Length: 294
Ligand code: CP
Ligand code: NVA
Image 1 (cartoon, protein in one colour):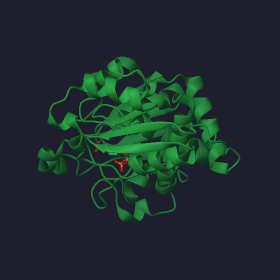
Image 2 (cartoon, rainbow, N blue to C red):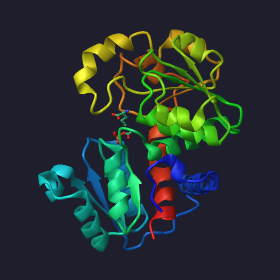
Image 3 (cartoon, rainbow, N blue to C red):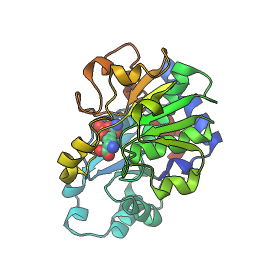
Image 4 (cartoon, protein in one colour):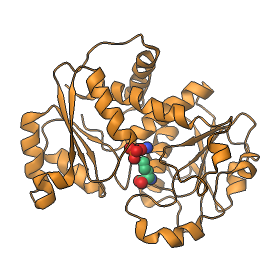
């Protein structure tokens, strides 16, 4: 099974992964599901959480992860994705890939005979969304009917989050500047299920969950100056938070640029679950690996 989009997992798959992750987090499940298994991790972009949590996860499951910066591979000198996938499939039991173009992970999966897991592309970040849903469940219990508000750039993290949330009956509102709203990729899948506002305060009204991410994702650096102007009003700060429910949780996938998309007082404040969310990357990816790698 490949996990290129969060929609490659069914609702039942996700429920099983989250249940297993919870047992792992509680320390009740310590089996070495991946004894002597190996995965290759090809990264075209930087990473702190994804890289470290996958490496630790593999080790805790009894296996091993080989980190490969794209430029250290012949792939960086022009060897094809096809040949790379075919060769790696002869050595390892899974391939974890972080790339710019989503088509790169699709191509890798097409030629790989072992499972391929998307560790972030420009289009989706499915591993993040598993940890996000787990965290929401941990802090809010029942998922159905919750109001999730995304503030800022409708990006890869947002796409996977919206898709997983809609599977579980969470209502989604987006507050983002015109020109940075949901793409056809999302609208075609979920038309009618998203409320979209250009006013962040209207979007945030009565929110159970406020979620934001950087204004400048990896690959958007050329637009940094323009984006910082366009997103100026879309900061998660105390004023914005005052529009949400009193017990709303604040989430961010990290890395954050403190003082830009989120203020430090909110990030470190009582509504923030951001560092629990980061921890949950480890538990949910352990469960995902246990399910996907054979
Ligand atoms: N949230 C996330 O994927 O972080 P990294 O870029 O550090 O892996
Ligand atoms: N949207 C951000 C998320 C990083 C984890 C990016 O793609 O850079």
